[in-house]
Image (cartoon, rainbow, N blue to C red):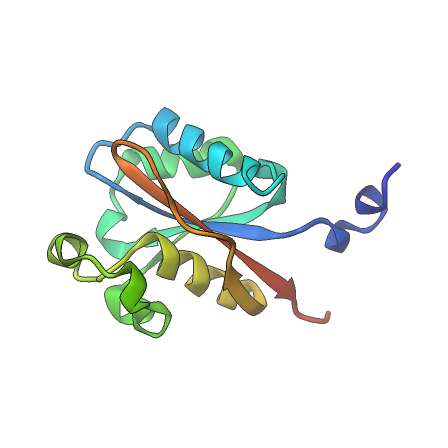
Length: 143
């Protein structure tokens, strides 16, 4: 057994912030997510949760992805995401569509902050034809 099997806190924990166009298929979201994780030598086993913007609350692909991965899917309002916005990731198109200048990165940071401390983005977001994915790491709070 490896150390991570003996101590679950030893394995890196990450969350994914997901943005997508209307009707984006679960398969496309999963492919983007696994690609994003693989860039950091991570798998879906490292995931502690998924997040998106409240505007996407009724998006079937996101719910299907969360169900398939057995992960909680949290939604954040544009106001919830304000503290996590960066001018580097702002998009006028995204703001017009969702009310938020960015989705993937601030959603990942918001969820990571809720689950632990020292939240930080893990690299840049990735894109597919219809979706975006950003990963954030966090430290578990002491029990």
